[in-house]
Image 1 (cartoon, one colour):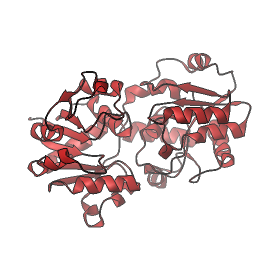
Image 2: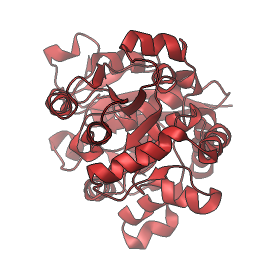
Image 3: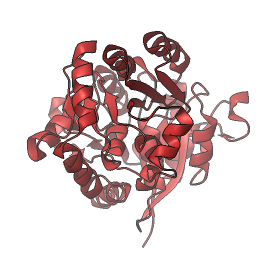
Image 4: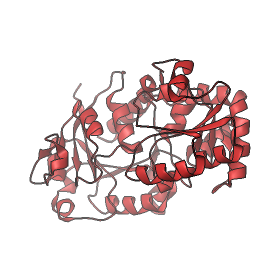
Length: 360
């Protein structure tokens, strides 16, 4: 059967939830008919070398303007968006909140377009507006039920919900809990509270540190991830926690981190289908979270899955939720079962394959 050539046009090659989702699909171990034709990026800002190298195992990366940051990893073409359109059967156009001459000169009408809501916030609405203003053959997806409302009301009934999926191999720890904690210098009996993922204001990364500072002796914060605001937040969390903190780089086998954590905190003001939560669930690591994205929808169907806090929680609220989470209960097992059965990258890629076959 002929492969479905999927191309992606997005502003940058950073490591965030969207590119993590792309890589999870690319690395899927199930047979499918999706082929990656390439990724067009608009500029060198936030360009992540490691992310680029992972993508290049599957497809080329294009840009219209060269930059020393690319280190020869990016193919320079007259119009990167048009190159993707020419090479693809369907083009995902995502992430732009304003247009530019390259976008305006591309022939978006010539191919079907995949328009995806990866969030549930005002930024997502603005990005969708730019995407929907180009081309006429739009096929729309939201990674969460709440993301449907980010599309114009007139088209919401045409939007397909396809949840994110987890690359299970990332969640298989390569070392034991005791070994990892020893490397981190965590004394026996101390509870570890993690923030795993991108450092950014929209992720409220100070929450884990605030909980640990409130809880005091016997608790330790662990931060792992990247992001252009990383240095700023690392300085802040150190000021909050003092020596009750371990700072790690981004690590691909996140299962090694989760196996050594006693809980993970995601107190974001807005999410859709957060990969960090799915990975934590799969790793049987308790999650303290605000009622964001897929969490309320799933909890209405399956019962409590997280140790919930209100939006913009106080240090005291965070501390109380963490204290409950580190004791764990049956919601941890329930969340693990759900992640294992419904949120694999194999399932995600097959859902997209079915969707594409219906529209092409």
